[in-house]
Length: 196
Image 1 (cartoon, rainbow, N blue to C red):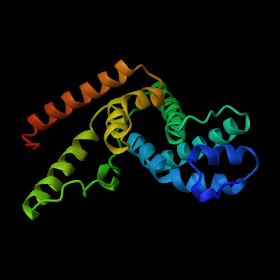
Image 2: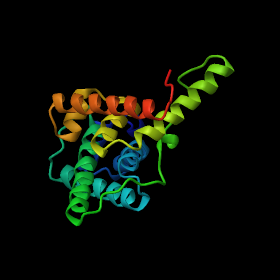
Image 3: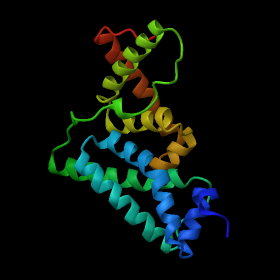
């Protein structure tokens, strides 16, 4: 058997199903920060994010043991699809209860990305300010639009992968991104922000 650290996530998933528990430990280590960041970005509440994160891995384990995982080179996208379904269940429950709110204790400041621009100090300061402004604005987008923005720009997923993960058509994913961009522009204009 190939050394675990050299295996892809898909190979680790198969190794886990075949009885190698250490393979799952490595899978968890590789995917947990991106998965948790995605969940937290969408739900904005640490307790709920923790529950969704745990439930996602429980469901993933069950599905792997039921041989419902097919190695396709997209293990993280598969996990995110499970998490997405959990998130949507929670939003549906909240809508039924009449309580849908935007959390205030979370923003994109925990998402790395400040190393993208390496120019002069002035450009760096401007870049940081624009990033902060955009991060604040994204938090006011509806959850479905915020989710697409996060997957596209912070997880670097293609629209096809986003469509698969959120179980919508590519056109719907593109439409959500379009509305997110329009809403961001509108909010930036109404707040007199200049986004370079």
